[in-house]
Each structure stands twice: as structure tokens, then as C-alpha cells.
Image 1 (cartoon, rainbow, N blue to C red):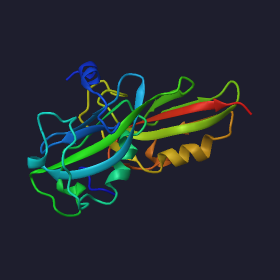
Image 2: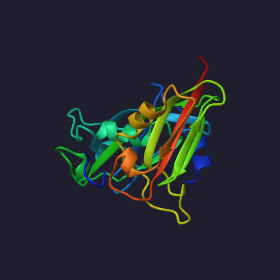
Image 3: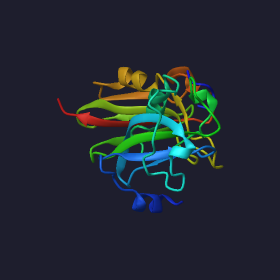
Image 4: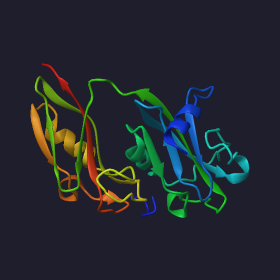
Length: 219
């Protein structure tokens, strides 16, 4: 597990465009949170996570690809953790660069660059959200459940809370597979949105929720 410290949306979406290689970039310079954003109706897939030095980045334009270090300095699990937090979401916010994300070569001048792309979320995907300790009811009137993704943790400031929370990057590693194992191929299933059922989050947090995307497959 990683260490525990692992603009208006419309304006961001309007100003964001694909680069010549077809990918989007977010460069979190020192002291700045990562902020990935897809256009409305699209969801992201993280392709790479790299690091470099502030002198090799344009910190006035976080969407511009920076020159990254050739040597892999980040923690070996960093790419998997960022994908766990961000994949299948329209937007995500990541922690500021810190030493816990690196296995070596970290400095106060280090940035983290995330490379990602966006794709249209299929119209037949059904999304269910359950607050912590509530039950997510997943069901198909016709066909069988096929889980596209399941995420348990906290991924924005406002879901399942009356007071906006600053934590937006806590996630459970086993949640997706657990929901798949429990629900795939059934007409309906119930999942308890709890750490007891879905596993602890990293970083550890207790104001979580479960979000499940699934489709109904006719057999």
C-alpha cells in the first residue's frame, strides 16, 4: 500500500483539448493537487504516471506535457493507485506530490504528470451510488448483471456528505473484484457499502461511498 498521503468544471472542459499524440495531460507542480477532467458525459482512463522537476514543466499550463525523468522514481504501485482512484470517472482530484509517492529522487521541486484519455460513457451503463453502510441494490429487469466497474472510497468533495470534504482520493483495492464476484451473472444482488465487505481504503478514511457502473446483458 502507498503511504497515507497517497476553475470551474465547465471552463476546464471547454479549454481542454487533445494533444498531438491523442492524450490529455495533467501536471501537478509542487504544492498543487492533481486535477484530471474529461468533457461532460465522458470518463477517463489513466495511461501513465511520471515525475520530473519543476524546471522542466510549464506550471502556468498544467495541461501541457512536461519533460519527465527517464528513470522511474515513483513508487512501483503509483500507477495502479492512480488508476484505482481516477479510472471511469469524469473528473478526479489527487494529492499534492509528496515523498510517499516516490521510491527515490524526490525533492521539493518534483512534479507528477498523469497521462490519460477520455471516452464516451455508453448509454446503457447504469450507475448506483450507496453511502457508507447503506446497501447498493443492483438489478436488471431484463438480462443479467455485468459489472463494468465498482469503486469504494471517496472520489469527490460532496457525495454522501452535507459538508464538503477535502479528501477526494481514498480507495479500496479489493472492492471492484468483490462486487464482480458477488453480482456478475445474476439478475440482482445487494452489496453493503462498508469496509467490512469491500475492504479498507488507502489512505484510511471513514466517509466513503460505493459507486457501481453496470450493464444488463441479455442471454
